[in-house]
Length: 212
Image 1 (cartoon, helix red, strand yellow):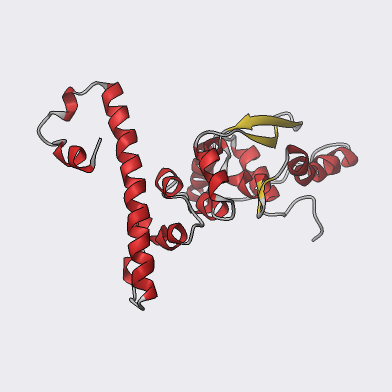
Image 2 (image 1 turned 30 degrees about the vertical axis):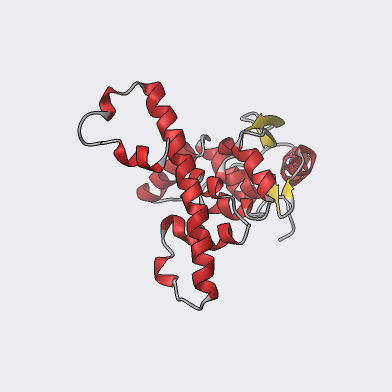
């Protein structure tokens, strides 16, 4: 599909509703590719305008906020299109090589350590889409993906502390109804039960298992 083909696709005439699901998925993929290619071109123009001293700060919204990173070779345009809106993930990916970014975009598996509902440390192979936001800082370092062993070391101190005490300690926190609903919504979006979600957030923030 060329840019002309994409423009020619009339989304308001009903023609799009007559396309098969497979055709629509193909066209979506092609359109995303075109968007990424266009972002690369725009990034080159952006970099040249900045070199000439133009103030583009008013245009730094949405995807354009990442144009300097694309132009500077810190982010792949396809990664920006795919993970638009996930600023934490894009910030982490910008520390990796473009080659690594493209491999994870293509589905390269990541070994992730986690604590299951019974409190045991487990590892699983997941795509980058499946890494919960609460685990991003544990799974990724500034140099790339931590090994499952390194991840486990960051989680294990809490598990050892629970064993040393002989039993887990239940902590009660008073929340407003709105705060609790918000917490539940975040846990649901992360694909976690609320207690496990809270525990992982505390771990990711370095509030458990370390020195105060």
